[in-house]
Each structure stands twice: as C-alpha cells, then as structure tokens.
Picture 1: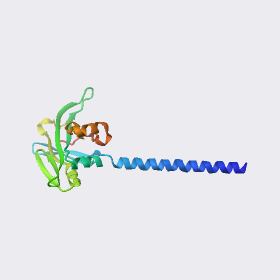
Picture 2: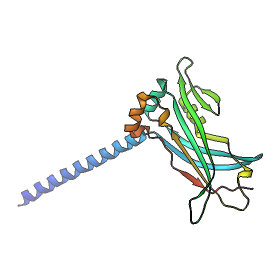
Picture 3: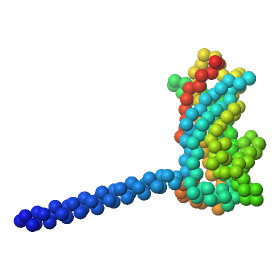
Picture 4: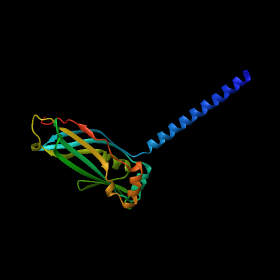
Length: 199
C-alpha cells in the first residue's frame, strides 16, 4: 500500500513538473511573439497657441516587426496617416465636428544612398538608420491644425488623435499579407483629451 502511494506521488510530481514546464514555455513564446509585433502608441498630445491658430505636438511610440523592416529594405514605401479632430461635445446629440485634419507621413529606403527617407508636408529628410527615421516620425511637432477663429472662448472642446498605417497605399504584393496578418495592423489607440484653449 505504501509503495503504491509513493508511486502515485511520484507520478503526480512528474505531471505537475510537466505542466509547469509547459506553462513557462507558453509564456516565453507569447513574450517573444509580442516583442516581435509592430505597434503604434500615442504617449502624449497637446495643442499650443501659435500666431493666429493652434499647432499639434504629440509623442508616438512606433515599433516595426522584422517583416516590416525587411519590406522597407526591399524598397516598399510605407504611408502613415495622422488624423486629428476637434469636437464640440453635445449632451443629447452627436458631437459637433469643428475641424478634421489628416497629415501624411511616408517612410522609404533608398538602396543606392543607403538612407531612409521620411516625407512630411512635402519636405523630405534623410537618415542613416531606421531608428533615426522612426524617431523623426515619432515626434509630431508644430503641425498646424486649427485657427483661433474656429473656436469660441468659454466653450469646452474634445480633441482626438489617431495614427495608422494606410493599407490602401501598400503595394499589391503586401496588401494580401497585411489583410491576413496581425503583424501589419498598425493603428494606434484613439487618444482623447480636453485641450486648454485661449491661454
């Protein structure tokens, strides 16, 4: 009886160890998978008064996975949209749209010069590394989005910001992969705040 009990304990211990090993292996695999995902995350955003209007400043965390980095190196152009909205909240109806602005950012790689190109507002900047190009894209500065005449003093407004990869601009060779893969689903959260205007 004692031998049978000891045998059962040994089997149970082995089973528990196997389960723990499987749990840790799954956790490690999930961590590695998440680390290799592409992502867009808006960390902060603000409206700053400038001359007769307001400019948008924002900080975005951008990460590309290996597949996207390889696509860039192969010469594929990636187009991103920065979408800003200012709304006037209404209590019993839909929010009133004051202004909507879409800002285009393009990232590509020039093989001959071995430089990364970032194009915004028709202006092109070159970078030696992808990290430098991403840093440029991550820092949204002095983007004109609003005139002071568009808003009224004393009213509260709601600002919304979103950044996403424009899938429609992807080459057809990549569109199929983008539609069927989470790796290409680069869309930030909808960042929302109440701007302090007229200060």
